[in-house]
Amino acid sequence: MKKLINNPDDFVRESLEGMALAHRDLIRVRFEPHFVYRADAPVRGKVALVSGGGSGHEPMHAGFVGPGMLDAACPGEVFTSPTPDQMLEAAKMVNGGAGVLNIVKNYSGDVMNFEMAAELAIAENIPVLNLLIDDDVAVKDSLYTQGRRGVGTTVLAEKICGAAADRGYNLSQLADLCRKVNLNGRSMGVALTSCTVPAKGSPTFQLGEEEMELGIGIHGEPGRERMALKSADEITELLTVSILEDRNYRRTVREWDLDRGEWSEIQLTDPPLEKGDRAIAFVNSMGGTPLSELYVIYRKLAAICEAKGIAIVRNLIGPYITSLDMQGCSITLLKVDEEMVDLWDAPVKTAGLNW
Amino acid sequence: MEEKVSQTQIVDWFEKIAETIEENKDYLTELDAAIGDADHGINMDRGFKKAIAQLLQNRNSDIGTLLKTIAMTLISSVGGASGPLYGTLFLRASSAVAGKQDLTAQDLANLLQAGKDGVIQRGKANLGDKTMLDALSPAVETYTTAIDQNRSLVDALREAVLATEEGMKNTIPLVAKKGRASYLGERSAGHQDPGATSTYLILRCLLEVLEKERSKNV
View 1: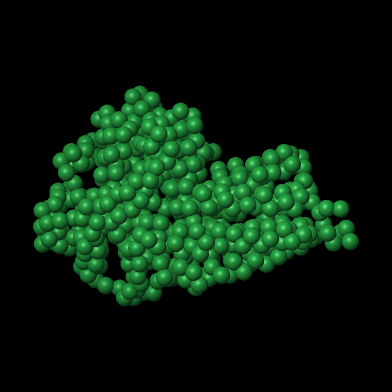
View 2 (view 1 turned 90 degrees about the vertical axis):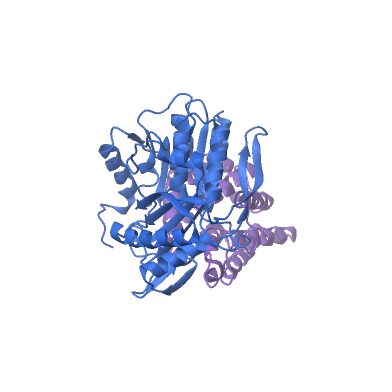
């Protein structure tokens, strides 16, 4: 393993310390338990938006803390979800009196820890809702898995909901918006190499020079299928077709019912992308792939969308939800309406996203 | 005289767990790398190191308090799925034996049963989903049946640990339905579940502590 680290045990802490030094105007960092929060938190009367997950996906999530996006982020160890005490302390710090919306990626560890955290915060009279992101079309059979993973749509949901929170959406309006973004977002990724987790010190999986892993998540967990390496255009086609051909995915999710004060299960179904739809296109590097290659991917993605009658109205291209040093990319298409585009365009000032 | 598990043995049990998890850190991580995200050993080692440090500061507390200390430390230091699952297991177990200075064979049965119920509720897993439950469930059943048949505590636990080992090995051909391994579908078959493996190690540690004591007494 060749990495710019001192000691694997100190990696997350030292990275956060550096981040706090680099962005003094935007964020503050707390330790034991770790969380990153807006320098001006709490913002009175505004719903606080909190996200979190394992470290190793930078700039997500700490890089998205700031005006127009997240109020706090809870980083776990590398690829390991944060713990409930982190989310509880973050919620207490950023709650401006209007409650907290947690954006949670659908991984068992994240879901369980955020559920425990929500229970703890609610016990302290902080209204908290957890909204799941589960947009990865690589996961085919919902009966035999715990559902789809949460990947690229997370970034778009954090931006759009962050803008809405700034505009005064209340907690349940914000939850409805976040649910809408999730249901309209679809992603799929590919790995050309494995990542190396610092504490482990060797690649998580072995991939030959002429091989690629299709349908990977963001943790180096193996994907849907291993196959011979293809050209950029062929890879783009494989990913995009999987996204466009994905039909009405149904799932049951657990959400906290604020009125009844208990967890309730609700059924949700995705509307598929159709000819005539407008979309935000997001081409993401898994960390080890340069921007030049992402543009090669975007070139083909734009052509496919045009041929299918889907108008790309906004785009985001770069490393935003990464997997350490993994080479590879993911594509996300988010079907948007006027409200979502308008919120997407709203100003944002964070370390990772800024306009 | 009826066999009991003493408060000191519970402390010894967790010292043994912390040592064993450290020894098996790389093994657990390798198992996880095959079907998950290669952090199970690392996370468990971090959690039990912290838990044992907390426990040793409170080493004279009753067994319920000891287990609760372990649970809270695991919940706040492990992360991933293992943190809430093992945290809930020991938290429920602590409630089942609150205030006790030693455990009868029946107390241990109640402890195991409560822990198992907690894991099921938190993880929403079923038997055969290729999770820690596939090792934990046979342990609870075998142990309870054995003490119902008037086997001694240690003999019942020995049978339970054998059943747990078998349950752990039986996860090898299974297709995962929970956790990150579930995203692999059919490709998860052929690998032993890391969570079932750590569950086996934890129960084996209790047996080792009790057997050591017994051999001293003979």
